[in-house]
Length: 140
Image (cartoon, rainbow, N blue to C red; front, side, top):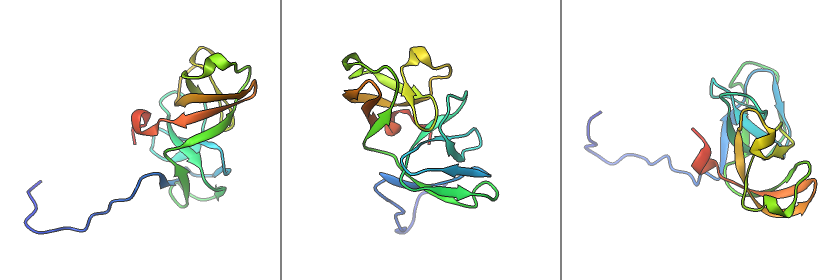
């Protein structure tokens, strides 16, 4: 790479809401947790080895075609209500991990530890508020 010799357009954006290409034959629902698969395409979150949390889907998108034919907008930052099982007040301040596109759990109950974020509020045994830590945990 060489140094710039003139000004260039800055392709900057806030990075809070980002378009992410969907994997082939994938449908994600608004409010669902989304992972990057090993090829770098978005898919429903799962407790799957080598996947990385991408964010929370802002919209429902159904990609019935090839990988990258459609994009889903995902929230890369924010605090979200997330479903879980057997949560207690002691979860506050603790990291949670993807079980699937709807549930998060503690590391001790997941296999591959796909980190989603940190609990900032206990709502009930089946709901917590999670601060998305994508800027600190994501590879993309």
